Each structure stands twice: as C-alpha cells, then as structure tokens.
Amino acid sequence: MGAWGTAISSNDTYADVYANFFDLYNEGLEVENISQKIILDNHAIINDSTDQNNFWFALAKAQWECKQLDSTVLKKVSAIITSGADLEVWKNLDASNIDLKKRKIALEKFLITITTEKLKAKARKKKVIRQPVFEKGDCLIFKLANGNFGGAIVLEAVKNSEYGHNLIAATRINRPEQPLKKDFEKAEIVVKNYANWNNKPVITWYNPLRHKRIEHLIEVTETISIEIDYDLKKSMHSHIADFDLHIIDAINQQLQHEKNNPKSSNKIMVKDLIKKKWKFW
Image (cartoon, rainbow, N blue to C red; front, side, top):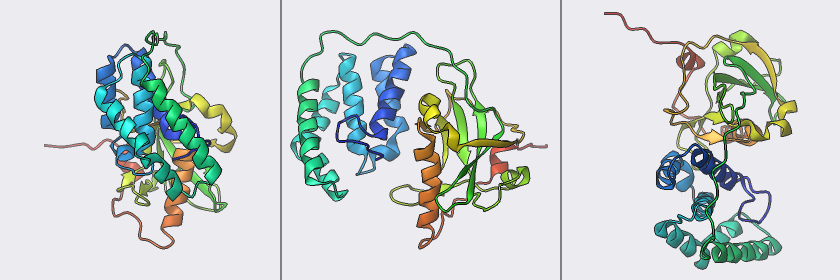
C-alpha cells in the first residue's frame, strides 16, 4: 500500500493512479477513455484486497474533479466506505485505534465531497516538456537491505515528453562487490511471486516526478547496448513515480520471500530484453 498517513490521498497507489489519470487528461483524452485505460492497466492492484480501495478512491476523485463521476464507480466507493470494508483492511494491517478513527473521519469526508456536485470541471494543463533522468542502456546500482549491491537496467528513455519516462527493469544482481557490465548483461530479471504478485516481472515505466528525493541512492555505473525500441504508448507495463518503493523495495521483498519459499519459475534474462531476435528463412 505504501501509506504515509490516514488521509485518502496519503498512499502511493492513490498518488500514482490520480497522477496517471491527469497525465492522460492533460493530453486531451476523454474521461471515459482514460478510466477504461486506468482500469485495464491496474488489474493487479484492483485484485489486491489490501490496495484495491485506494485505486477506486483515486479514480472516483479524478472523475469527480472532471464533473464526470461514473455512477458505477460512485456506488462501488460508497459501498466500500459505508460497509466498513476499508477500515477492516486497516485493522488487518494492524493500524492503531487512533489511526482507525482518523481514517474513518477521512472516509466520511471523502464520501461527502464526491457526492456533492463540483461547480466547475478541472481545467486541462498545458504540457511542460521534460527529459528523462537516465539514458537508454544505463546500468543503475543501489544498496539493498542486506547491504549488497542491487542493479537495474534502463531499457528506454522517452525524450521531449511531459514527464521524461524511463522503462526500467530490476535485475537479480545481489552481490557485495559493485557489479560490472558483464554482470548486467548476464543478469536475470526479478519476477515477483510474494504476497499477491502472480509472477510479475519488475519492469516498469518510471515517472521521475519525485526523483530528487532519492537520487542520492542511485548511481549510473555502466552502459550497455539496447537493440530493442520500447514504445510508451503501446506498452502494457505499469507506471510508477517512486523508484525506492517500487523497484528497490520490490527486490528486497522478493529476496526476503525466497528465504523460505521458491523463486518464480518464470525466468526472464536481460539478454531477452536487449537483443533483437533475428529470423532467417
């Protein structure tokens, strides 16, 4: 969930869904089409019992701000709040009584807000062109929870866009010495099978809106050749805005999980993501 407070918006899922919604809104897409894409792109979260409520809250708030709150979405959110389902999630996550009371107040205020008609739809913002923080082929290193070096590879860099996305693949590099170029080229991709993750590879588009917060944790150490071009608009990979939470922590949690459980049988190598497969006939 990645929550940092009891407010409706104080968690990573809400922040990411809400931001992605208005990224598309500011590109000129219609609210109905945006909603369909957001739902399609977030099936894993929607099926996660600990995080699905945050998704629907974000979608409802975004639609409401555009004066196009879908009745089905409103009904779903209303049921989540009035049934106490969201508070039950927080109880299962061992929230304190004080936090439960605060969350209950936040939920009630939120429901009042989205059931009150907004006077004016949110205006679309003019795009600001930005550049990605990493170059295509950059090999990134960072420290893992066990003190070893971990690594990730930048598969794509989308330049001259609104947010400057990078497509990043987390590797299973886990070594006390700083990894070399050959270590990245021979590495395996992290595939999550802990919690409710169903063999999902950690390959995601990175939106560096909050990059300054964690840039000191990451170092570019090598560069490798990437023969494949990845298209942001045609990609089915998820979008994130917190490198530490969704890449570094994902590696840490998978490694911790594997201490008592087998790793995923879904094996993906770096070479599969960087080399074109040629066909001869």
